[in-house]
Length: 266
Ligand code: ADP
Image 1 (cartoon, protein in one colour):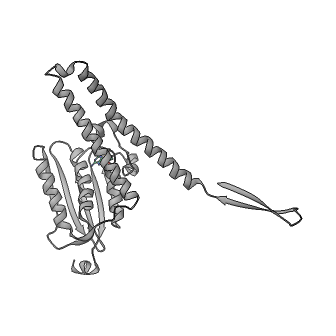
Image 2 (spheres, helix red, strand yellow):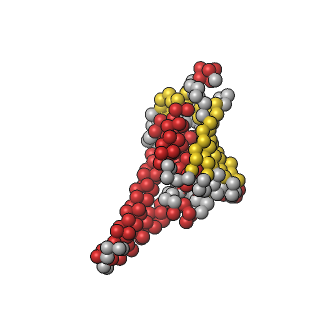
């Protein structure tokens, strides 16, 4: 609590009272603290790939450049690190736009089953060389939601790419769409490592990772779920997770129907 005092004086100059103004600064302090942590995290996340690139570039200029066995490998590493930084900066830009509400959603009427099918088709293609199965429970009915197609595609992308990253070989990923009374619920269930109970409340926080090294190795930025949560919230929906450590994880999000008639049609 922050307190400001002023005295009340009579015309004669004699003091006859005190006004105390009390401010609750805990909220201000919390926001400031979060901001500091965020900047520290961003700096750290950028420094890691930069430091690694610098040491590989130094090794190349110290002679590795002329070693045909090593040079291409070192160049690959620096290229991968650059990719990671680009991903990170893109994710940060996206978050900052959502924060400032600068990014107006381009709302349209979207056929939810079509959108989900489309994203799953794409993942089926891109994981063709991995031993991962997709199963769908997506109704063929018209189910219209109001939303921004690109943003919703990204939300689903972020969740499915995590499911792929954390799935074991031979794992199945179930994608389902359930029309409920007042909302559509889309779920992605994997058979991966799962998330320990104590970590679950934090997974949507920016830069939070259960296993930092593992996430980095898999190319993660630690921002995917934070972005997913912002997108769901901007659409008036929710996002949540349930997970059994060692057995698998289900991420779900909900979206409101486009209009009342859509609900009646269900
Ligand atoms: P990252 O880029 O690290 O994947 P995210 O914000 O997408 O960042 O996810 C945050 C963390 O949540 C991950 O580092 C991981 O520990 C955990 N996580 C997300 N999805 C899954 C999943 N399907 N199975 C297990 N853990 C997950």
